[in-house]
View 1: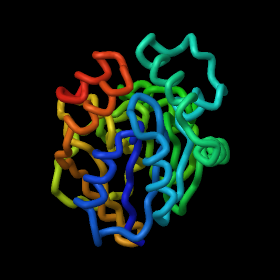
View 2: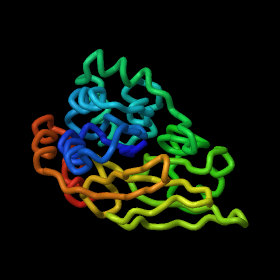
View 3: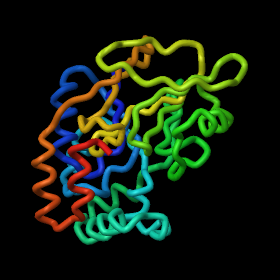
Length: 242
């Protein structure tokens, strides 16, 4: 099965649509790793679009926050503003969809978690030390995560050490025998100094994997955010990928 692997759309419809156009005809099912809403101006529109497509999806920390499942004191002021705005804006249908999402799924050789297999909704795997701990919390060969908004691979070697790798875009690689934690990056709010939307393509039979980036109309999303009086830092950061 050919899979479109995406994470952290964050209510950015322009970015989501750009990914779908760029990957058109190359996938059969979407695996979405969580954080459908928060930060961006199009929570209902992104939810409606995802629901139209053949997909499975996870709940992320911003999705939980919108549902009042998380203590808001863990969020910075700008994120809190966006969460409060989203709570007032989403439809009951969107709320029900978010409420039904699981935090972890296993699909064949792949464990899917928004943040980490150890703490599925709230843990940042940003370094080999944290990754090494998390290899003990899943039994499949591979784990796919989001949450950090940074595309990266963590490979566990035979001696249980962990090696990080920066992805090479537009190059197809085959997942090997080593256990891996892979982050496809963020569709709607990249944070690796590259403002392009990030995603990946996976063939679950051949284990072919490809990281990709695609440009989108950032100004279109920013204009909507300004219209809704969202904090300037949230608006501006989209241009810089941080």
